[in-house]
Image 1: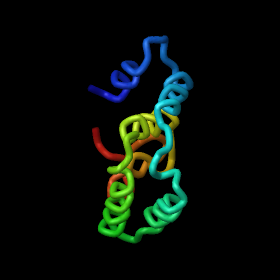
Image 2 (image 1 turned 90 degrees about the vertical axis):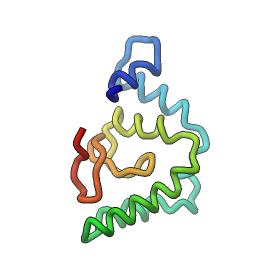
Image 3 (image 1 turned 120 degrees about the vertical axis):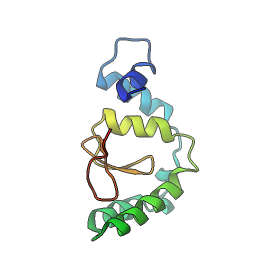
Length: 109
C-alpha cells in the first residue's frame, strides 16, 4: 500500500494534507520524543553533521532506539510525509517529507 492510499484510509472525509495532518496529530499523544531526556535536537544535529554513512547509520540506530518504544511510530512517520517535515520522525531522517538513508539521500521507493 503506498503512502497516499494509507493516508486516505485514516479518514472517511475528503482528504487534504491539512485534514490528514490534523487527524494524525490527534493520534499522537504523549510521544516518547517529547521528553527532554530523549535528546531529539542533538540527534538531528548529529545526523546533519555526520561525516560518513556509518556515522549517520549510527545516529539512525540511536533514533530508532527511542522511537521503537513509542506507540505512535506509524502516525508520526505518516505525519512527516504529509507535513513535508525536515528532521527526525519515527526514528528516521526526513527532508521535505522524504525519508533519507544513511547517505543522507532520499530512500528509493
